[in-house]
Amino acid sequence: EAGVTQFPSHSVIEKGQTVTLRCDPISGHDNLYWYRRVMGKEIKFLLHFVKESKQDESGMPNNRFLAERTGGTYSTLKVQPAELEDSGVYFCASSQGLGQPQHFGDGTRLSIL
Amino acid sequence: EDQVTQSPEALRLQEGESSSLNCSYTVSGLRGLFWYRQDPGKGPEFLFTLYSAGEEKEKERLKATLTKKESFLHITAPKPEDSATYLCAVQGLAGNTGKLIFGQGTTLQVKP
Image (tube, rainbow over all chains, first blue to last red; front, side, top):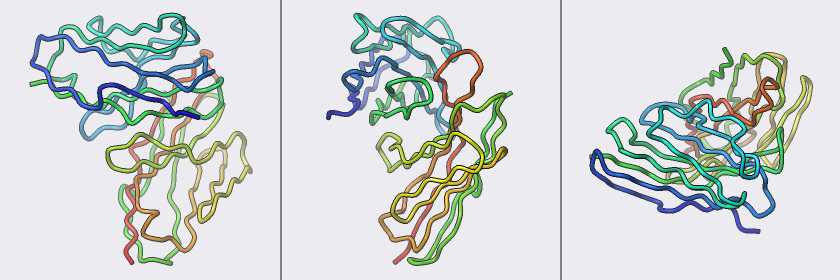
């Protein structure tokens, strides 16, 4: 069974540019999550999809971040325009349901210059 | 506010020297507590889920336990390959969300 895959693994962009991160969850997992870790801090929740619907987006930092999950399959997270404080590692995870283990991808390391 | 605190931040052990990692949590209704292992440059790898006080789970040299306020990850006779960062996370019952709240992790180094 393929795990959660994220693309790209690294991205370096300049402040003000746009970046789109992609996540392919484990097949059959209706629940998809985005998290991020900024330097020296713990992993923090961004949002939770159930199929194509946003179940909880309470962790999204501001309206420069837009997450979508077209058709309830893969998801994208767009940052536009990127700011210096957006640098960090963005993780995607998926699970079969609430209370079930979330399986993580290896993350996208985002650097804003 | 829901919160997770892990201790110690770092732990150095000799191969074969058993020890325990602590995860203290505050949550308004626990849906589940999760332990993960993370290697450098990789995503968290799932180890255990605990759902209620008194529950225990084991896998090879690792054993996780849960009380109403904390969880322990016991490592018995560790090997160098057990070196990693161990993360604890909780999921609450409120709001019907799958949000995980993570601690900062314990970085374990096992020397041969």
